[in-house]
Amino acid sequence: MVYDRFQTEAIDFINQGFSVIVAAPTGAGKTAIAEHVIKEAAKQKTGVIYTAPIKALSNQKFRDLQKQFGETIGIVTGDVSINPQAPVLIMTTEIFRNKILDDPRSLAFYAWVIFDEIHYIDNPERGTVWEESLMFLPDHMRLLGLSATIPNIGQFAGWLEAIHHKAVKIVREDKRPVPLHILFQCQDKIQDSISYSRASYYSKVNRLTTLVNYLEQKSGFPAIYFVFSRRRAEKLAFELSGRCFLQPNEKQEVTSLYKSLCKRFDLESEESANILLPLIQRGIAYHHAGMLPTLKEVIERLFTSRLLKMIFTTETFALGINMPSRSVIFDDLRKVYGRYSRDLKTRDFYQMAGRAGRRGIDTEGFVYCRIHPDKIRPEEIQRIVSGKPEDAKSQFNTSYATVLNLFEKHRDKLLNIYPLSFHFCQSRPHEQKETLRLLEAKIKLLKNTGFIENEGLSIKGKFAKTIYGYELLLGELYGLRALEQLDPCGLAALVAALVFQPRKNQRNPFELPRTLRHLKQLCEKTILEINAKEQKNRIYPVSKKAYWHLATAADAWIKGADFYEILKLTDIDEGEIIRCLRMAQQVLKEIALSPHAGVTLKEKIFKTIRSLNRGAVNAEKQLKG
Image 1 (cartoon, rainbow, N blue to C red):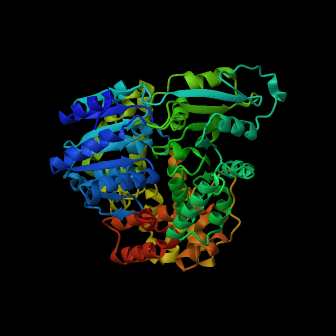
Image 2 (image 1 turned 45 degrees about the vertical axis):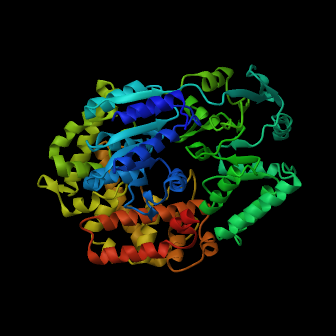
């Protein structure tokens, strides 16, 4: 294989035994470097951990690498375990972090860890997991970090060198293998540059048909159209239902492939799959997290077959999944960050725009931004498309489970660990002081609530240390012996309530079964007490409440209802239901792994998992499909 300059540079460093961080544009060929690590580890008869930020990316890497390396590849995520003793093990970063803290000896065989999308350390919700994984990385492991962009890569590598006392080599590639050409649709015209007055409020509406006609004239298909709303993705796809982008032979081919894939994934009688068929036959589809995971899988396979010409999708389609196209379209240059709508970050723009331009097929990729003059200023557009990508910033906020694990090993000296964090490296003195205060407050709360006692972990604390994110509520329920009294229906409803996060203003119109009402009351009382103690100690964010929107459906699913029946018991998207029931299994496994979960509780948990893990919820079945 002939490598590009940056690939050769990275591989030379790897062969010399260095850890390496590679920053190169989407589609530049970073995967080839990861594959080299796997080949070299096989020669040395050592193992490789491959971590990814989302399960869809973990699944895709498993399939891709298994085709190349066969049975040497395994995968362990919260809802899938295939060949878990394999020398190359793919997992989510959460699983890797948990192994480091809970069972570091299980990593003794693995000489390398590959962090795909390592800039995810910047993610507000999950970045702490990346930071903890890097902070506590075992001494014998080297790392390969892959990212489309880390402007402050020098600072990042310097931090790793300082805390691990080992050199970390930096490899950069700024040049895209397929250059991008950015255009704008404004006042219903396609143009190379953007200039307008905010007084253009009554300017012409940007019509989808105008843009599609332009794409047809310029041979702009296939195209990925990024939308920041599930419902809008579907709406726009159906707006084009009067158009057909396929030749008769292509229509026949895509219909045959779609039906065969639907049969393979048991989707033949699914209403959502049948609704999509007329669009598929026109070369159109949509893809978002609210869809059945198996249906998303079918759409992805159709797109890689090049039979889909226009796909309307949310931004997760841009994250690592290898789905390049000739054109990328932005419905808007604003999205919700946290609770508020803001203009896109430059880094996020290029994460999505980078899907334009297929290496070896296109000489240029095209990006179209649909501009609404009343929503965004020209200078902001300029910043987004021409500015410097934002630095990766620490989102450090250690979980109670991490504190419990570290306290068990280091006692009060764990406060000395904070200076090892990327947050400490990046922060000003007053920020460092506040983070240290927050850590001290968490230790104090754990002591006051009986998770830590006599300078060690109590039984309740040892139970809670393996349950990341829900440790205080579940720990208190364990201490009250409430968990042991639950049957599989109660366990399923409880963990479904813990993992579910309602959308803004989403209410629960479904009444709970009588058997679950006492459990809900107990959880509400317990979490109110926990949150009050957190607020008193100025701990933020406070522990998550349980939301019971899915409880009735989970109860019915455990009792054997089919998927059509449980859809009537909730107003939650079908894909979201499956995601939550799969996450529920992960939480149940974490409870079962706890050293102080009793035999009876473990038996009930495994029975609950078996009842949950069937039909559309069975992720392993999907992965093997």
